[in-house]
Image 1 (spheres, helix red, strand yellow):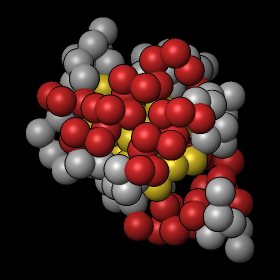
Image 2 (spheres, rainbow, N blue to C red; image 1 turned 90 degrees about the horizontal axis):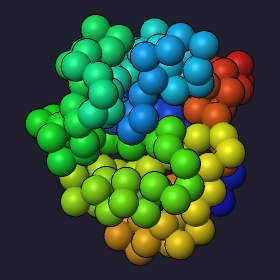
Image 3 (cartoon, rainbow, N blue to C red; image 1 turned 120 degrees about the vertical axis):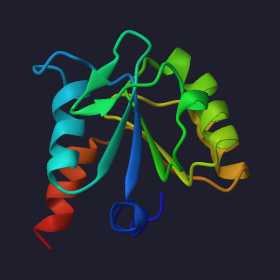
Amino acid sequence: MSSDLIPQILQQTRTIAVVGLSAHPSRAGFYVPAYLQEQGYRILPVNPHLTTALGEPAYPDLASVPDPIDLVLIFRRPEHVPAVVEAAIRAGAKGVWMQLGIVHAAAAAQARAAGLAVVMDACMLVEHRKFKSK
């Protein structure tokens, strides 16, 4: 991964669809998107078990999101990543970010081949804090 990819994504992203956003404040799937929202990003929750989250309507899947998506932030187990990446490509997202602990090389290669920026196994909150401190 290019060392300037993460700062570039953090600067250019405005709207983040969070697949697997959690309703539980103690889980990273909640507090990471909440932090990002506080930093000015628009968060679009994607979770079929929620109707709203973080003051935004929640969507059952990426195909249901009516707005343009800059980045898809993935909080799902690795076996679910290929389907999320395919949906991100269909949705016209510019990038996918697999949260810390999530790696799927084949899905990452598919996303890159479709022209999407890809980050794997990195916490967006941690990376944003590093970026802000520079």
